[in-house]
Amino acid sequence: MNIQVIGSGCKKCKALFELTKAVAVELGIKDAVEYSTDISRVVAMGVMSSPVLAIDGNAVLAGVLPDKDKLKQVISEYLPV
Image (cartoon, rainbow, N blue to C red; front, side, top):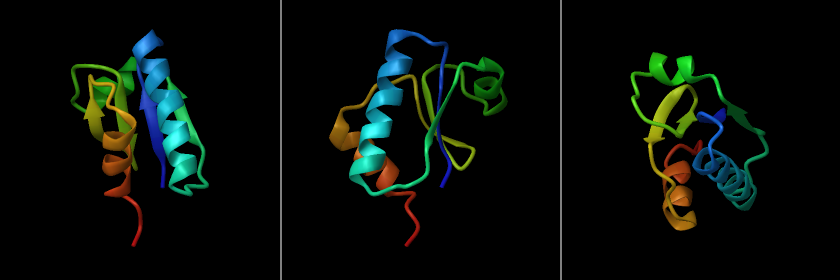
């Protein structure tokens, strides 16, 4: 599972990255969460707002900083069975 947070480097983007790392640990995900400020990756995904949470190359959240429970729910949907 490849989890990425992509954003401009703003406070909201960094907060999503830190929250995503914490949720990944709680869910037992061993893969590292990646952080990128390469906005061209956001545009390539067809998304017009940041931060973006991408799982396995697909944008699953964009432009929001969800609470911890919502983020867990979103990531859990992509965990292998």
